[in-house]
Image 1 (tube, helix red, strand yellow):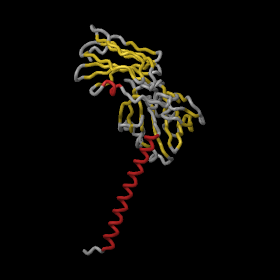
Image 2 (cartoon, one colour; image 1 turned 90 degrees about the horizontal axis):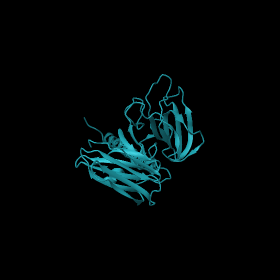
Image 3 (cartoon, one colour; image 1 turned 30 degrees about the vertical axis):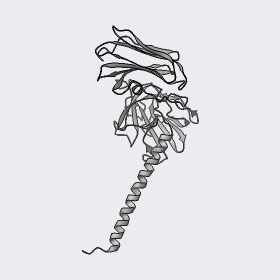
Image 4 (spheres, helix red, strand yellow; image 1 turned 45 degrees about the vertical axis):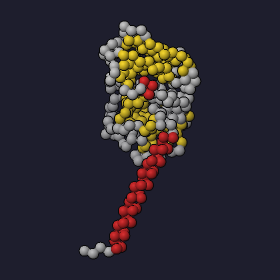
Length: 304
């Protein structure tokens, strides 16, 4: 069969248009993600708290929606505080009834077509038209939904840009990093005041260390206990959440049972520590101070 030059040219044109269209779509996605990174969204929970997000645990999910939980039981986080991921204006604060499965919903408009959704809340702390700051409490974790839809407590969180659902749901970005879909555990850097500590427990203690416990020091900071399975060392550091960049009294300590306590204390701009000690198979006491709050643990973690 003889194929005419016109047909070949037409096919080539269609292939070219298809390639150009795909490239344009990729560029649009990259632009959208760059815009999301620029919004400085933070995790929708108080500073220092660790939460696990999951984007594929529910058949109701569309694209990049996330369910957040913490704790070892189904309703362990019921009533926990939910905060604004970024500053903006509340445009929805209501129970959605039979309209959808959102139950108590807060929607915040952040400008530029960007908005965030906080669903299934146990209680709402803001009203329509109210301006909210990043890190401000907007409600509590709950399990409200439409009639007959029995769910366990969690926060359903979405970032949207535009109005055409579900194609307007964007990948969530927290502290300048895209969420690790489909699931990831993150520590909140939503510390208020528009200032974020660039240091993390693992960046202070170093490679090989993993957080095994933590304690909030009010709103001033969090003290962390880490362990390195490869060398049997524990590490303690106190990460500041307020007065970041300004030297203030901060401390961290680690005491291995049977040994003298090791402490790092002084006026620090970002963190105290790292305080490390060989503690494989031994009990440890650990703690620290930031602002007016302190934490002192009993001897614990005797197997790590």
